[in-house]
Length: 89
View 1 (cartoon, helix red, strand yellow):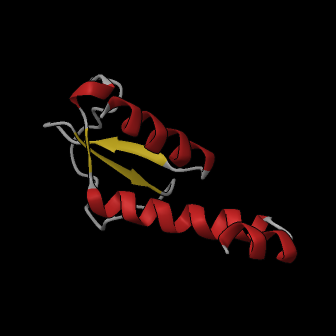
View 2 (cartoon, one colour):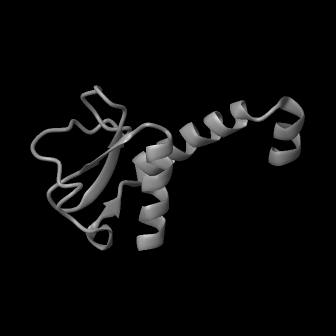
C-alpha cells in the first residue's frame, strides 16, 4: 500500500496539487488556494500530511479518481497527436 501512496503523492506533486490529510489519516488532494479537496471535502481543521507516515495514510478513492483524470488529460495533451494515438491505442 505504501508504494501506491508514494505513487499517488508523486503524481499529485507533478500536477501541482497539495496533499491534505485528515486526523485519522485519510489522504486527500487539493488545488492550491481552493477551499475544498478534489472530492469536494472542505479543508477544515489541521493538515496532518507531515505528521503521519505513508503507511498510516489511506488515500481517498474519489480524490484518486480525480487525480487519474487530471493526469490523463495532462499527459495526453502533452503528447503530439500521432504519439497520443499510439500511446492510448
